[in-house]
Image (tube, rainbow, N blue to C red):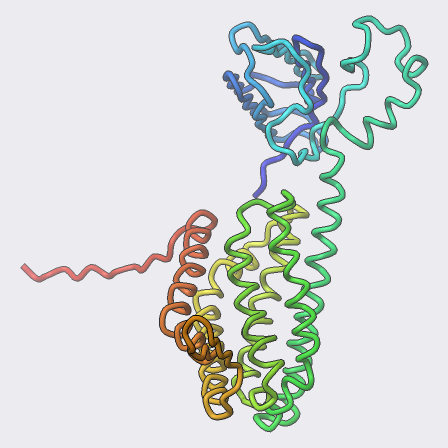
Length: 368
């Protein structure tokens, strides 16, 4: 069950941050104020009625906890937070994504270019409130990011679900006889979706998502290598049954992953979806790597037979570089480390999210 948070309104001047917690009938709140963090928990009457409410704020910069004070009234809790260093903060919290319960206190608002005493903010700064509603002190881009990522994840989910539905209907209708036509049926859609996934390498670089770009680049690059260089350019591979299993495995991973991402963006945690996201890879990743390996190995045989994809270099030493040799090296020393890297990453993520896999052991008592 998620913890309820009260509405918190904030304002600042050059020396002080003002917080107003919109919670009535607060009795004996649990408040922890440190040099960079405020933790609040109390029972009171808020937007969800009489309930237990809590929130935590990691301040943008350090504050003086000893000089900072709070006051409890019947209608709210007021905090006067003293900044350690004099200056204006671009936002209240260190995180760039503003929580939905944090609002601007327009009654006490001051801006860096204002005088300390302003008789009528609306008269002197007619466009100020509209600007605040749009920007929220450094949070303007967060709404765009959320909308963009939600639409992106929804689009990709629909795309991979289309692949699953087409392949499933074909298999139900024709059984294994549908395997040779797998690439003809959904190959173009898979190529398009995998090329779109290049955006996922860019997302962490532009700060749209957390984490680095290495793991997405490793996964997307490996798939594009198999899909474009192996399957698209070798028609004889397109009719092999392994293509059906590869596409179904890739699509199964994605129709779990993208809905999970959407649930996190919308703050709607789903226990089953979270468990699938951090568990299904244990089976699906090895199956996908085996299918990719089979495709690369079969393409290697075709290249050897046709003597294709080779380059002859005459200076300074004459030798022929064959792409089949590159594929051999990839199969021998590239695939296993790649699988290990991806599965290690997912295992660490699983431990952080839902804990490691545990095996219960039955203890057998020996007869005395």
